[in-house]
Length: 498
Ligand code: DMJ
Image (tube, rainbow, N blue to C red; front, side, top):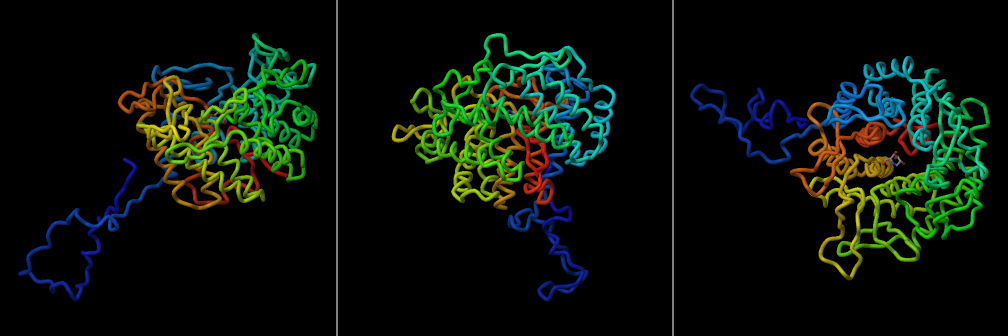
């Protein structure tokens, strides 16, 4: 139980040692005071909840499962009490390093550091996804180095960063999606020569930071070239980008769908964040970001009925589709960050409206957890509900985007409602996704609180991102990872700014 009442009880103010003028003088003939009544006014009950500590408890519980059944492996399968391997790089452990540091979990951190030192080897004949290993492994190592100044993490970051470089050896300089980090070879997926746009445009913060720390420009040169190519590319719609890009031609492919969800989301996020990372001097990044937001306003932004929730839909071959991925809930936070760094005030207004919508995607579900994808009702055709969830979209993967945005919104507005919304989300995770023997699990159905259907998978980003953002949301120390000094990569790893 995380909720403590004042241990001395709400009736404390009756029991002062000195007699009040209204109370009878102490006398043996006076009947004893009645037992403390529970019917006191709510204001008299002091509810003290240590929210940051509740996040630490959640982390420890997740870690217990990982340590017991998946130590050194990529992901915990908490229900079957085993593990799943993706790249074989201890993904959860590496993704969680800086979270442990920030939460002050020294013992856990030091044990994990020991594993990195002794057992984390990148000299393996294994294909890894360039984007995922950059944001989770390279990003995690760089931020842990930044926080701890421990050379071990920089050495490991240089090792994995160098091994990922063959991905850029393509005819177009747009990187392949997969790299064999042991053999030093790279290739696209078996079925296509395309890469996804978000994947090739959301590795820049990490490689630029690696160049800054090592003084070796090869990393930033490779990713800056990708940014330059995409900046000059035809086929955008008012700053909005298609979902795929061909590694041979360097052109967008499968054009016609524009979304801020899967496959393009962090393209937009990294335009702004690179601009901040570089000391707000690279004008073309800011131009592309502002242009894209115009595109969002013109083509993707609508209000639902009956409650007029502002949402970001998709454009599919010129037809508007009122579908919003939970992934899009990164946008309120990014908009707020831009406003904090001097962009127009209406970015903050839009951030607050979208934050409300993402909040509704949680509170309107029976479990209090958002589905992976929401469909919004367009007025006037309304059946009384703003949000619909299709059967295949009812799952929740413990994703971070909403709590991430809540953190930014709270930092910049200090409105406690954002903390309260995050608190409710943590309670819902605890109620519906916590596995008794350790760990948290993705679930199949956010509309069924009785049987949400555990999926038996704890994604590494639950520890790397979701719990970290919840902790930062509940911390009132605004100097903790100041947003004037740090920029978070898309996996919640804080990196330095110029
Ligand atoms: C994470 O790996 C990153 O946040 C990425 O940008 C999107 N997908 C997951 C979390 O949802």
